[in-house]
Image (cartoon, rainbow, N blue to C red; front, side, top):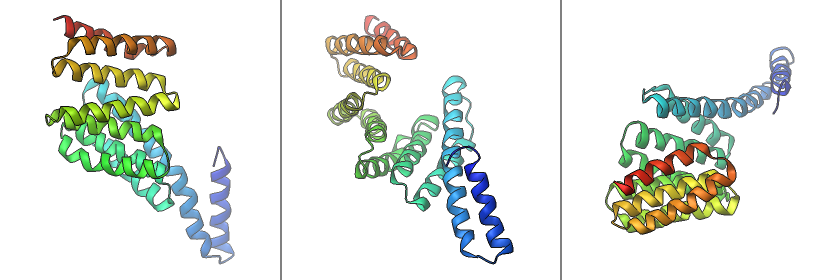
Length: 215
């Protein structure tokens, strides 16, 4: 529901309930408002997450927003939206709080829900962060498999910046497992992809990774 449409619809339903005695309009109002609040909560939560990445200052409202979005999307029966919100709840635990164990079940549920509706974008995020959890736990083969799946999914849907970012993650894993030549290959491919889509931030990550390999 776009622009003023939801405001007008909510107003109509309010009048139906208030003045015409149509109590069923209340439930319909909830659905209209939930469908607006859920993506708004997601958008606000994502803004707070990027702010955290920039300044490393934790804001607990981020978690509140993502949990609220997950609740609303579940109520709406929107599996894709719920999967996305659950991913970000997991990201709060893993990235903001540094607790990959707490984040893991959210990533697993996110992946399963996204797969059920063929939401390959969300699948790529959830499996990527499950790969990070495996890497942190020393399960390097599983981590490589999951990170590779994430890159493959992103390549399939044409998510070029995400593909490049995924290749950078594989490069870091290669360095950690003692394979600098593979790491260099991943970074070469990542650079080509990032340059082709103007992903300047990812190009910065690639340069940082090259510095690590050279050191």
